[in-house]
Image 1 (cartoon, rainbow, N blue to C red):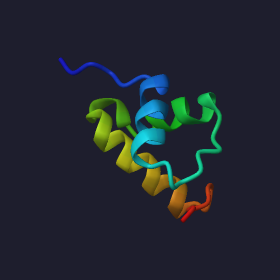
Image 2 (image 1 turned 180 degrees about the vertical axis):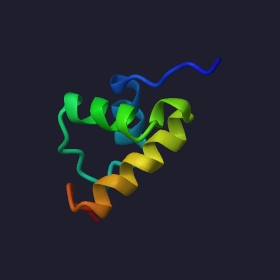
Image 3 (image 1 turned 45 degrees about the horizontal axis):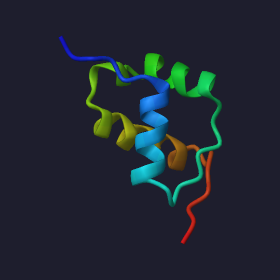
Image 4 (image 1 turned 90 degrees about the horizontal axis):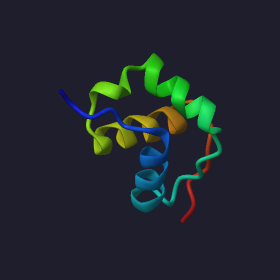
Length: 65
């Protein structure tokens, strides 16, 4: 059974690998996205990819150069 990704793990990974995208979602919002979009069945890197896509597609963060 795969280990479920926690919000803290996802935020840390996201900030390290996607630091150019502002992460303005609360922990609760991230947790809800993990559950709603079934990120929990994905690897940490895939979850971060999906979160980045979600943020950018919904204009919820800015891309910094």
